[in-house]
Length: 221
Image (tube, rainbow, N blue to C red):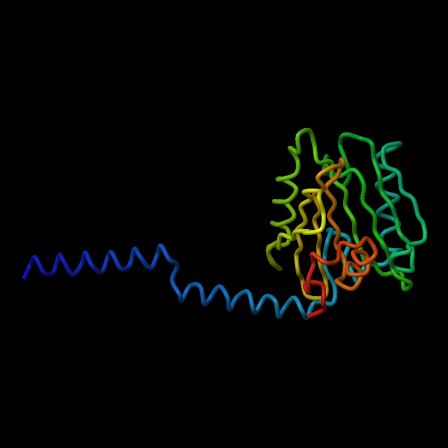
């Protein structure tokens, strides 16, 4: 009787171990449900916070101007800010650049960023260019940082361009009507992160003929 009890307990433990190894179907179901609920919340987003003072679809050019002035004044001769017409959005874009080792926005790897506004002067796109570092030492930390920042919304989707001979790496973060693209080119000094709407990113990637690798990801949900 005693031997049978031990045997039964051992079989139960083995079954439990097998469930833990494979992943509980209940846990998996909850995870899928949570992802589905988050995707639904993402589809309802009308604006997307990308910096502490910048929200796509909401922040205006006039709200960013004093921030630009403050950056110039607090870093004399180190930060350059230029304004020009945006071919992408039909409004204005602001370009921020530095050659300083301290970088921009308290990030030593961030060398350039631009914000594009639409005809109503509302921010529609943020493009950030990070120094990839000697032997790509900054690439993984940049990817991890952006993935962490966007974790409340979604996880990265790795994309592959079958028609390209270069071994570029592209990651897409799908956030309802918005999308974030992280590009790590095989050649070049910068890792580029583009925060924008799916409509605008689709337009840009159609123009540069890399749209195929996005499949249906840039179709609005």
